[in-house]
Length: 297
Image (cartoon, rainbow, N blue to C red; front, side, top):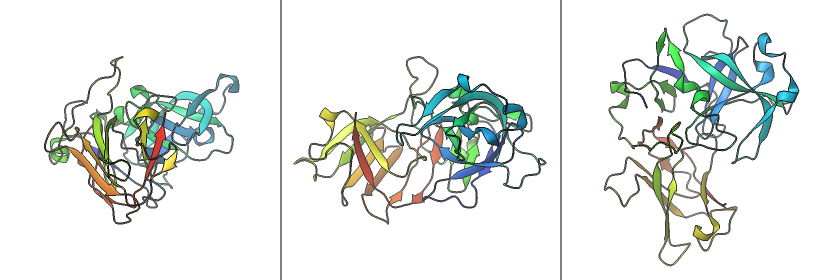
């Protein structure tokens, strides 16, 4: 992540954004009309219906299509990576005027399924798989505003995405150091400790897993090998209500005061997430109903 500077820009969420349907931002791509995109920290790259792009991007060869797919949903799309200007934060009735941040990079134009009319703004890191276009396709790493490049960091709040780290918008956060991946072209997700109540074993259950705060899904998923999963919970099964879960990063046994600590009880509609973590993104306090799901590899 770059050193913080004094320039930032807040891209607001659309007025209908909420915890049930997710957080969306408006953007206009390649000279096309404004479109709403779900903010997804669990993928990398913008997924956009082909018809949303401007007229210069409608003449293409379908035989050159490749796949882009998501592990959590199983959805797979066919299309092509195309380089377009992305104007962020524009209103639905934008007339092309005004001063907005612009990202330059490749987006995935979806050709199939033909009826796809959604869109995702993938701004995660270290995701892997088909849904990881890599840092070059992360729009928030390539944003300019008023001819100045914004820094490589962003804050996700309940109001929008504040792009660009500054001393004033990061002074209330604790930091989690990140390691580079083996190829050196991206960051790795930070390790975290996850513990469950003793409903799953006589002495309780705890494990170490990479931490991914994923705004693209509404449930917590534990991905682990079958031989290390909780002994009394079958794979691909939802957690029952009343299970207390705590996640900490860095892991709870390494320091006394973790930068990230998230505790909740499954099924508790009064559950609160209190996230104070800075990696390439940061989040603040949200109220939500919480649940969990176990999936073994």
